[in-house]
Length: 611
Image (cartoon, rainbow, N blue to C red):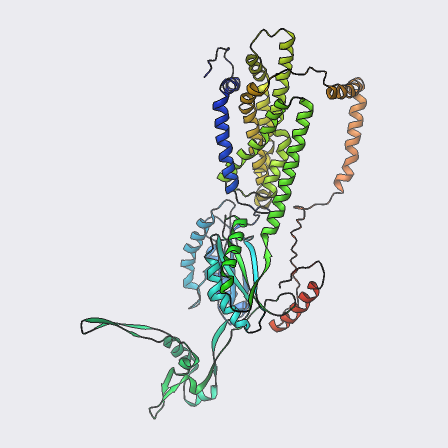
């Protein structure tokens, strides 16, 4: 380590001198930080846009066969009233449908989603007593409103599998395989028919045998049960005793005893009803390409996960289980957000690369000293890598807004290094003209100390220019804060590198003869600029007046501009949501859906239609 014999300076000057006198230590520390930033970059979740959704917990309750107004009175309203008192709750919304209730609990921004879920469970326990008997509210997946990242359909090319068979395979096999994938919160099934045992009762026979409907329902429910009878010891071995009563076929249902007639003959379910296996009542259908109904699945990503990584893992799992699919059944991908993510990130990466190349070329041309230009050029990738360290710590995703903040900062990020290098060149020019009376390194250090503090604090002033964005709340805050964070981090690290990385490299790379001010490009620019400056200073009143007039002419154009929350994002996928008058049956809706899908699929630009 070289001893410091210079006069005392401020902390920035001392830091510059230390880094210049100990370049190896400085560069090793910066290289280690750069490697840390690279690892943070690799671990940063990728997505197309920031998650603009609220922190919400969804309660889903089934009460089959009940009308929407009854569901509203008996389930939705009691749950909504109870959850309003939960801490951190901003609002509670309820929606009631035929046999279904949804309650959306919206929490304040910044609330941890798992803390919110635990609070909902606490208040749900106290609200259960006010719900109808047998009704059990279910907590929705730990996902956000934008967790819908992947969707697929099961297509039977052989024609040997019914919609009920496909739905059974989806519900009891494929869904569990995909739920086990890391980062998947839920696999929701759509379309097809859920198999169920159906008991078609003859009311005349029930009345003739004096058996009530409630007796029949109760006996069927009680009979579908296994019971235990402890153990019995036989010949030194214990045998487990149990009564096996789970229903496995229609014959088991038909054999359930309801009563005994006066003659002592048991009356069974089969005596008063016809038992069959059929589809459960459906409230929706799934259709693909206008070719008919199908079965599908929706992959919902867990909160805070890397969308691109989750989708890749789902695709890998689908490839693994493809050989186990029923013969003739194929998995068709109907929605894949990874396409949008890759396109958005690739566009931003291309833009960042172009900016870096342009900035590097401009620096090289104007400095006309490659090694000096290399100092400013190397500052760009290092500052960008370091920006990902706090991004990773905050669990920010790399999306068009957060990476856009880095893109905005690229030009200003290297200003400090350029000014410092330019000042070094000036001092070296004077040093050479004065006969090289001082050591070259000392001249370089003094040149950096002269402008280093001013450059550092000027960059910090630019850094804090985005701080008002952090005052934004709600959706606009969630949209713009990632940009403000990354812009602030990039500029902050650019300022730090200007007084650490630049001094360390300057003493190593700024060698050889430095060209004087007679740079041909500089001479041309100065020759073009000086007359303009002289004119502006001489006729400053006219210049100010014309400037104000030009500003005034922009006011009408500004007032005529339209307003939009965010620019349109061409995802390549269109969500088409037609509406119909209330009362349309599921069967009729399926026909209309198939007709619309067929017409949409007829366009040559359309690759897939899933409704």
